[in-house]
Length: 129
Image (cartoon, rainbow, N blue to C red; front, side, top):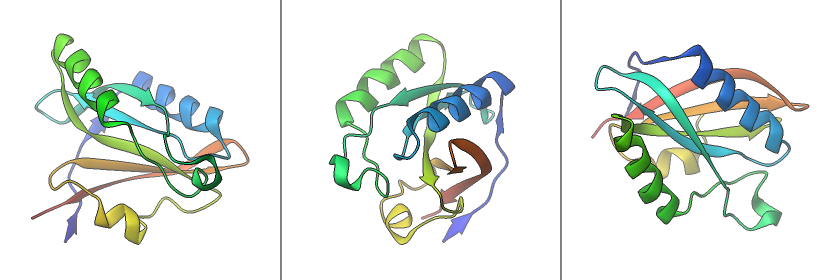
């Protein structure tokens, strides 16, 4: 089951995420959401998409070592990893079956629709156990 909970993202973190995703269009961009225990996303860490280039417009994968290093960086700033974000180039900001299958329960997943290099709709999802 996928539920919707309230999180907030600071304007600076939102603009940073949107700029990153627009900048990698038409490929899927991805990264990590970090923030406080109240659900405020204070920082985003953009990552590379390590998926084979032929599939990178329809799939994303974050290097586990990047997650490890960025989690340490977030902790140094007093934050925790709250979730992940990625883009859907030229598609809606809706969960795909693959997105849903690989979700870690209780983590926030933000999906942004990017059309012609501009971010549009942005949605967040959380998978319950």
